[in-house]
Image 1 (tube, rainbow, N blue to C red):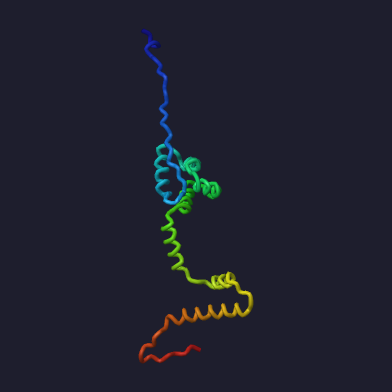
Image 2 (image 1 turned 45 degrees about the vertical axis):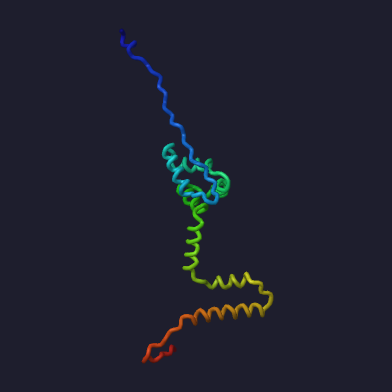
Length: 162
C-alpha cells in the first residue's frame, strides 16, 4: 500500500452550540430587574457575549413598558454598565425608592428658595393676601426658633452682646 492511500480525509463538522435566550423583561409591577439581569448575564456568558453584545441584544428581550423605556432612553444607554444601572433605577423596588426618598427628605433643610416657591404656587391676588401669607411664614419661623429654649445655669450672669 502506498502512503497516499493510508491517509484518509474525514470531513470536519464544527460543533455549533445553540444560542440560549433569556426570558423577556416587561417592566411591570412585580418584575425584578436585578433577577432578570442576573439571568441575562448567565446566558450572555454561555453565549460568549461581551458587554457590547449584551447591550446590543438587550433590546430584543424587552417588551411592553421596558421596551418603551429603552426606546426613549437609548441615547443615554452608552454601555452595558449604564444599561444595568438605569434599568435598576427605572424598574427597581419601589419600596427601596420610597425609603431613599424619605431619607433624603429627612436630611433636607428648608431653603429660602423653597419659601419663595411656596409663595409662587399659592393663589395670592392682592397685597393683603400676600401680607397675611408673609405673617404666617414669620409666625412659623418664630415657633421654630422658640422650640429650642435655652435654660440659664444657676449663678451665671447673662452677657449682652454689643
